[in-house]
Length: 77
Image (tube, rainbow, N blue to C red; front, side, top):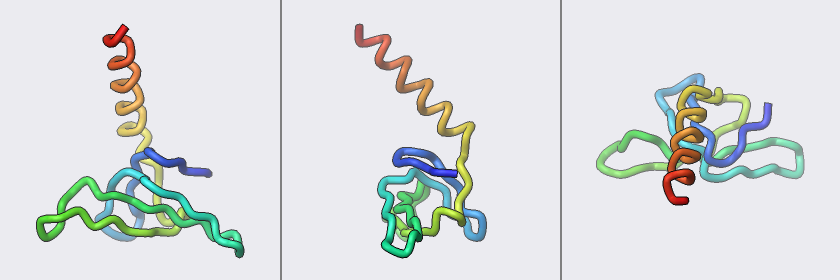
């Protein structure tokens, strides 16, 4: 499954949940995602590159953000 930029994801093996802010496809076909965490660690946000296969899409959060975004657009008009 392809996970796109601005999707909310959870890492399968560690306590990382956040928003995908970058996507890189290497020549060997490996896909890595740059995830900006939702929680601060040591007073700062430390984004991390992770393998696409090591994260799962947090569909409820992604759908919620998309709905909120759409509602904001309607309010502007």
